[in-house]
Image 1 (cartoon, rainbow, N blue to C red):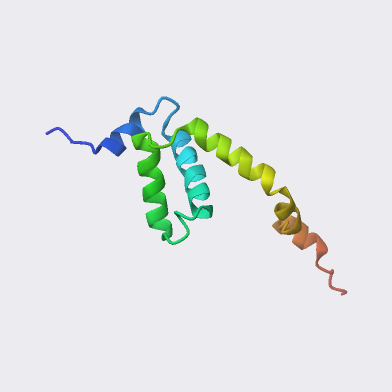
Image 2: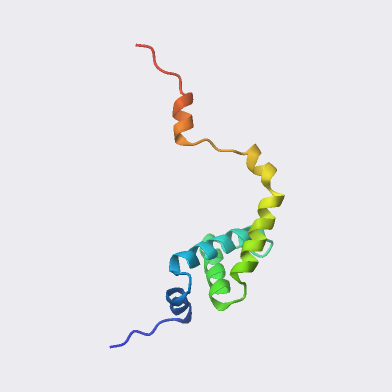
Amino acid sequence: MSETKKPGKKMMLDFKEGRFHLIKVIRDWSILLKRSDEGKNLSNSELIKKAMDDVTSGVVTEDEINKATAKAAKSAPEKEEEGEEKTVKEEKDEKPKKKG
């Protein structure tokens, strides 16, 4: 019995860079969508589905996503500096040691 694949699933398996690279591209596109007006009202599952559909159908290319990601990174470095989060190791180092 042969298994029929959905077009999106077939695209994921046949993606020239590999499916894990495709997942990264979809993730990057979903982050950009979430920041846009189009994606602000979508739930996370709707956002991921839309991103997956857009990437696998060719609505948006990897180059377009990379350019938009780079542009967003250039415009938001100040925000990242203000809200820097500490790693777990840094938090442990800051905790005062108990005296015996």
